[in-house]
Image 1 (cartoon, rainbow, N blue to C red):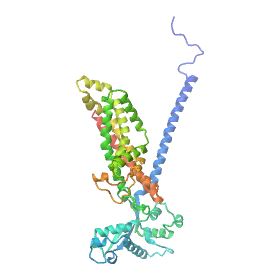
Image 2 (cartoon, one colour; image 1 turned 180 degrees about the horizontal axis):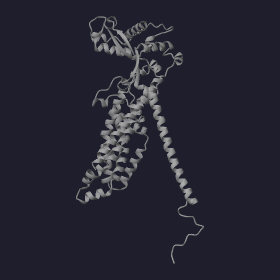
Image 3 (cartoon, rainbow, N blue to C red; image 1 turned 90 degrees about the vertical axis):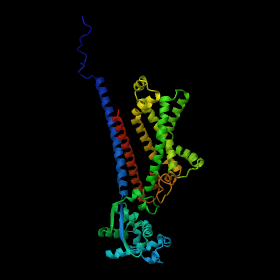
Image 4 (tube, rainbow, N blue to C red; image 1 turned 30 degrees about the vertical axis):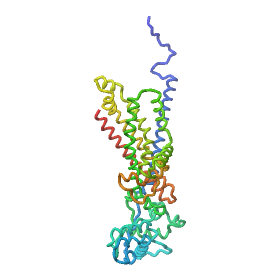
Length: 444
C-alpha cells in the first residue's frame, strides 16, 4: 500500500501547462507589457519636453552683434572740453544716439550697398547701444575726440532673423523691422561687421525693458535665487532635522504628538500660494520686511520646505534597524549618544535626499514669490551680502513667468533659455546630493 495514487490517464502532466496556467502566464505578460508601454510613454514625453525646451531655448545663449567705428565727437559729448564727469554726465543717451546713426551711415557707405527704400538703419542696433556708449565715455572721459570700435547688440528682430524667427515675409508686416534692413544685415554679415556668438550677457546681465529683449539677462534673478536658497538651507535644514529627531526619537507618543504629525503631513499638501499669503501677512505687513527682498522669499520658501524635509528625515530615521539602537544602548550609550553617533549618521543619505528634494521644490516655486512681490525690475545688480539679502531682487522662476507675459517673441526664447539654466541648477543640486550620499555611505 502507498499513499500516492497513480495518476490517471485523464490528468495532465505537471510538465505540461494547463489552461489556467496559460491564462495566468498570459495575464502576467500583458501586465509586463502594460508597464513597459507606460515607461515608454513617460520616456517619450520627457524626451519631447526636453527637445522642445532645448530647441526654443538654446538660441538664447547666442546673440547677434554689430561692430561699428564710433567717432566720439567732442562737440556732442563735452562742449566745454574740460573732461568734467559732472558736466559730461548731463548728456543723456539721446545725445549719443546721433553718433551711432552717423557710424551706421558710414558703414553703409563703406559697404557700397544701395538698398532702395532703406529707412532708419540705426534701428537695426539695440537701444541698449546708446547706454553702453555713454557708460564707456563716462568711465573713460579721455577717449572723447577719438574714434573707437564698439560691438553693439543687434536689435531683437535682426537677431531673430539669423535665428529663423523672422523672415522677409514677416518683416513686410512688422513695424519694427523692414525687408531692406534684413538685406543690409545680410550684407554686413558677409562683410564681417555682423556676427553671432555665444551670449555671456544672457547669464550676467540684469533684466531689460520690453523694448530691448536682446539685452535681457538672468544676472539679478540668479543672484536672487542664490540668496533665497542660502536662507532656506540655513533655516530649513537644521530646524527640519531637529524637529524630526525629536518627534521620532524623543517625543512621547500621545494625542498631542499625533496631532503635530497629522498637521505636518497636511502642510506638505497645502498649495504653495497659501504660504505666499502667509508670508505677505507676517513678514511684510506685520514684521515690516521689504518687498522683493530675498530674505522674505527665503523665509516663505523655508516654511514651505520644512514639511517635506521633516517627512523625509523621519522616514530615514525609521529605516534604521532597531537593532542599531538596541546594540548602542546595550553597551552603555545614552539615548542622545545612540541617536547622534549611530542612528543619525546612518540616516544621513535619506536626509540629504529629502533636503535636496525640498530645495529643488523651493527653487522652482513661483506663486508664493509673486504674492510677496519678487517681481522687482532691478536694472543693476544688488549689493553683496549681507546687504544683498534685503535689497530688491527677482528669482529665476518669476523671471520665466515675467518673460512669458511679454509680447515680443524674443522673450519666449529668453524664457526657454532661463528654464535650461534652472534645470542645470537642479541637475547640479542632485549631483551634489548623490556625491555626498556615496561618500557618507562608504564610511559605514
